[in-house]
Image (cartoon, rainbow, N blue to C red):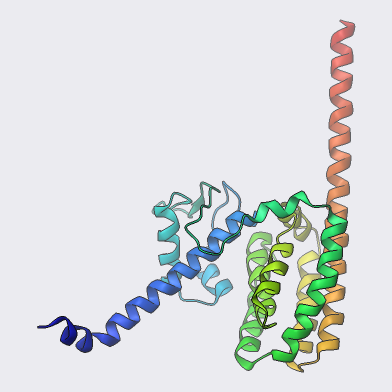
Length: 266
């Protein structure tokens, strides 16, 4: 059989295999981005395949394929009968378009908040004008997944990230969408702590409900207003966590000084 005839006869199967591989690569890149941003940290157990499939809105088989890709690169450890674990955060350049998300943390929180306030409002307003039914369907499913994850901060943040990035990508400007996505990843370690606070995930879910309601009406002004409430909440909760971390560091410093003084006195 000639190569041409083989391709023609097997075109559906080949096309399906290529598509499946492509989606697995996308899922691998998404999980790698979660590691690079700090949503998933070294030592964390990965959410179950079922939970990841729900968060990313793909099949469990596709999630399994993405995990296998990252396991082969040494980022994940897959152990039979146990949860898959993050074992490295050395996310390299294998994932095209993946930026070093931690670099955003070198900026001041006030500058980040001002940048998000300025750019994100424009992005989500444009997204509202360009919103399509397919994207709205994805966001509606995301809300369902969020509602089931309000007892798991890491899983909630994974879904939250997909929710935000989906809205950003709908704005029609890939550069601005990527820029706002980078801003979203700011201080993610502190965000993990913030969403674990009592009521934080429920409040965030309520914000998202208001955002989807405005997007479903293609109401740019209402969408921007809903995001303003959400951005303000993120800013305030992050500041609260940072202030608590600062006080803890100050107490630790004072404790160290007292121990040193006691040691010198002896």
